[in-house]
Image 1: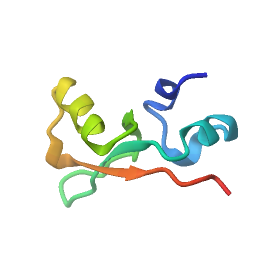
Image 2 (image 1 turned 30 degrees about the vertical axis):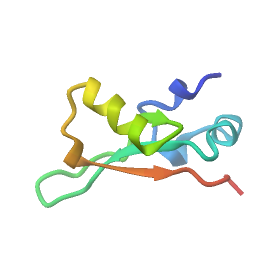
Image 3 (image 1 turned 180 degrees about the vertical axis):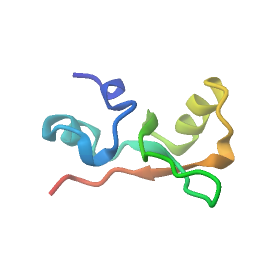
Image 4 (image 1 turned 90 degrees about the vertical axis):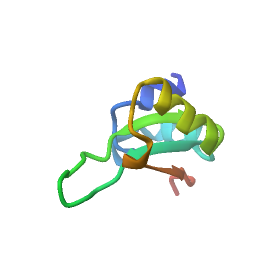
Length: 75
């Protein structure tokens, strides 16, 4: 199991072993606004916020449409 297995899933959908592996990592989630209702799927995973934004940029994503949060422990 790798951290990239989390891509495309919401934090709530992650298996417990994967969630434990990702504790402390930063994930990028699309922001809600009046024109979009994002599905809250993980678009990038990294050890730092800067690395998360760099991953989004490399995928051609618009950075202003994302928030980066640090995943806490599952319990």
